Length: 88
Image (cartoon, rainbow, N blue to C red; front, top):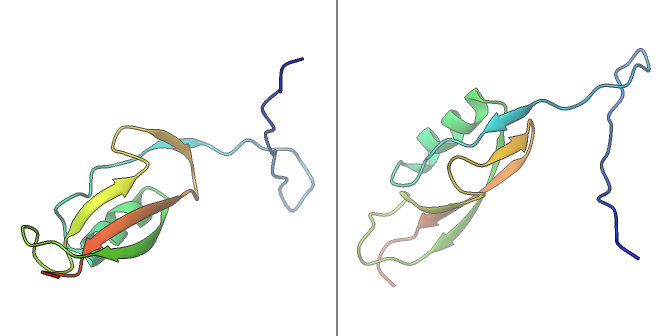
């Protein structure tokens, strides 16, 4: 017995069924947090931020992102950005 993937189909205000368009996740690693968030907003994605210490990456620069660059995700997906908090 295999599990089937559950997908949600949002509805418009008129009640018509729609599918959420997929967008390509851009690379924002190395950018400052504000610029990264703006880049994601420009392609209809959202962001959340966590911080991690780094001796190599300046404070407020993106250390990593999840999902990674090149992944196709539905519009409105939250991309988790890990920003440098500077040296520990």
